[in-house]
Amino acid sequence: MHAPFGARSYDPAVTNHPLLSSRVIRSDEVADAQRDGVPVVALESTVYSNLGLPTPENERALGECIDAIRESGAVPCVTAVLDGTLRAGLAESEYERILGEAKKAAERDLAVAVGQGWAVGATTVSASLAIAAAAGVSVFATGGIGGVHRGVETSGDISADLSAIGRYGIATISAGIKSFLDLGRSLELLETLGVTVVGWQTSDLPSFTARRSGFPVPHRVDSLDVLTAIVRSRLEFAQGMLIANPVPEEFALDQKVHDDALAQALVDAEASGVTGAAVTPFVLGRIVDASGGASVEANVALVANNARLAGQLAAQLSSSN
Image (tube, rainbow, N blue to C red):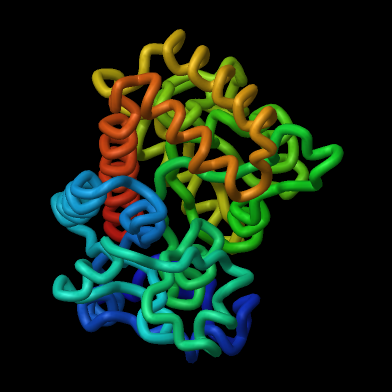
């Protein structure tokens, strides 16, 4: 069988983390899949922990994502920190651990998580991309990515997600950029970083639980064959890209409900002095309340939808290699 697509881009000798590859432990299933040329899709773990979706929706989301990837013929590779080790792929018996209490682990925190022996570290987009890169996995699915925060001119607050997407040769599939961020500046920074951004069957950048943001995507793609060709070209040069995949229409928040709730949440956050990392849970919590819980259902639907597209893409890349 042929080697997994993209693996050659992540020889441990040339990765940005020359020592990280020896630190990452691949599950038996992921290692076997890569040996046999079976496609693999990386997943983060923050969204499934106490830091992401509430219980029991987090468990349902994880199950739906794993099922969606397997139905495409690919193998799921949940990234996490367990007992001070960096993990690319978990055994089914270990899923329970990431569904509970965890520390948030961004890329910058991985060395600390290892050195301090964190029991459970839930990996963000940046940490997941670093682990996936070291493990030779080239397709990654998440929910919504971080970006440039509003008021960046005074706070300097920019998510590490953007630079990680630009730095690692991995195709990231998300439901766009989280809507409470400065989407225009986020797109501009992605351009500066050289990240190709395409909209999957959409011309409008999706904004997490809503299908539209008012910002056009640079490129629209409607065919899986064309998407595969674009991704293959990027990965051959070890260049990352962002595939914006809107939340399924039947689960998307009503645009007015979303926009009104977002506007009020941002006002409340400023009045309450909420800044930095605390903005995300604050604003998302307000949108949950304003939508009567509909945004939680939208979140579950969009992560599963992204996992499904990631599985299909990984399978297509593998079969055409």
